[in-house]
Length: 134
Image 1 (cartoon, rainbow, N blue to C red):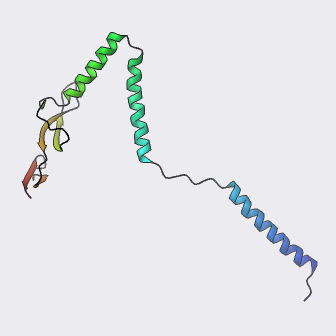
Image 2 (image 1 turned 90 degrees about the horizontal axis):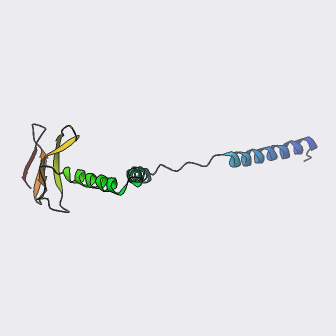
């Protein structure tokens, strides 16, 4: 068999173009983006919120900062209004929220401490918690 020079040149050129095209595609391709990390996003948002709250008190005079911190602590306690005391720590509860007043969006309408051996379910009226023994 005798090869003609144009045929050999065409084959070499085809291999060269194919190889160049392959590497050009590999080098110009964007890195695939990793899947979003929802835990990171949530932590980042929480950190920003806490940082901004802390930032709000940095430039306050000491008396104003103490007033702010006192009000903040009172607000954290007020979430339990009507249910101050009587909570077991590290125990699960089901709470029912109701509309709050003029200064609060919500208030606790009722609370039920979860007990072992009891099945809890939404009552037929759709607004109360019903229970029966397991």
